[in-house]
Image (tube, rainbow, N blue to C red; front, side):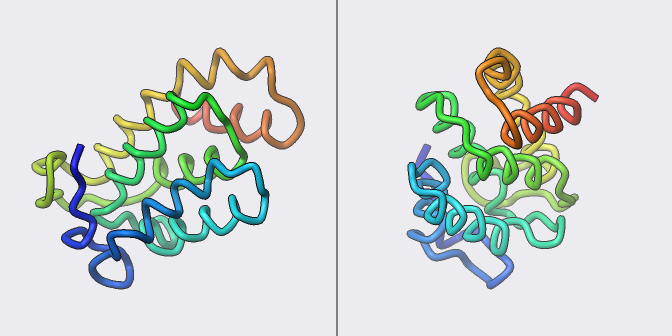
Length: 142
């Protein structure tokens, strides 16, 4: 999917074509500090205090695709998926291949695609990561 990030809005206006994709890459880093930077690169731009911007469904799409292809679950990935899933955005998306539907509905639909993988992986996780995955799974199944 070709995403024209510069046509999508974030809380700062139109997004920089490099910032959100880089933040998503950072979510999957082996380095915890880089993952945190990735989390805040999405949380402070794509979703802010539960408000979803029109870049949110595209960010969700890339995160879920990367999660399912790399099979790497990090706490930052799970937390940002929770933020995107629980976010509020009743506006209709008007940009790109996902246009024509509500922003929050798109995010929920996309994130649901990770449910099966997360469910099957929970036995291999522990501590805070397992707790966060269980919390997200409860929301997805509810």
